[in-house]
Length: 266
Image 1 (cartoon, rainbow, N blue to C red):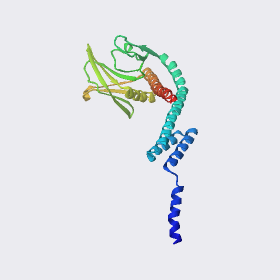
Image 2: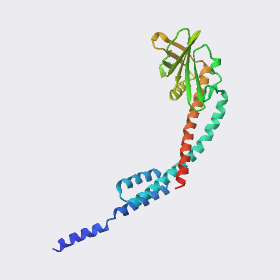
Image 3: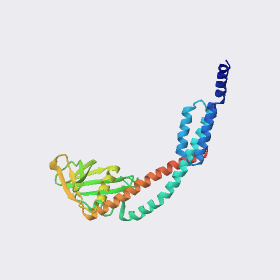
Image 4: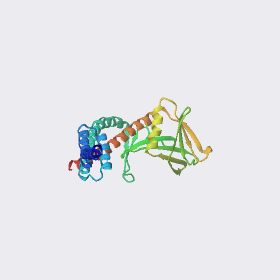
């Protein structure tokens, strides 16, 4: 009988000794604070998510967790800003040196953005021939254009770049006009332009074959890049890649600055 009497009593004592949901949630808040103080921000984020999921009714603790979450955003933004401030200056210095090889062109009447064209690739120096032109625009997008010039229209659709058995194929938007002979200009977007230039830069010491492809096999043409062209296209790739990196870092910088301003006021 005594044993039966003590069992419910022990159960009550055990239940009474267990922490309440409020106490458990508060313990998690304290743990989050410790993680934030130690710079373990990702771990703190995970624990905050767990607190919200486990204790949806503990309003005060969830409010404290939200405040700590804001602090994490603020600290991460500060870290991002410091990181960007370290990386940007050397990239900008490289651009300043490299851009001396380029000519700035802009037609204010028709263009909202100007472009940096390597001096060996300007259009006026390459009329009446097949060639690849590349440039970097004011908005830091890289553009590659495949120029065709000849007695018949080719309906240019594809550009195949190859070195031996190694090949890369690119497609773009074609523009055609006729002035005595036929001119076609196929334009590649930023990502394809950088990929094409990367292929050329990687194989610049080798013989690079360019095959323009029209809408039928009979409308194909082939030529090889000379050393000066490979040099100019490689320089354009370097400039485009740098501009891409700078653009990405400046976007990160802008977002971080907004977050710092926003969360510093809380």
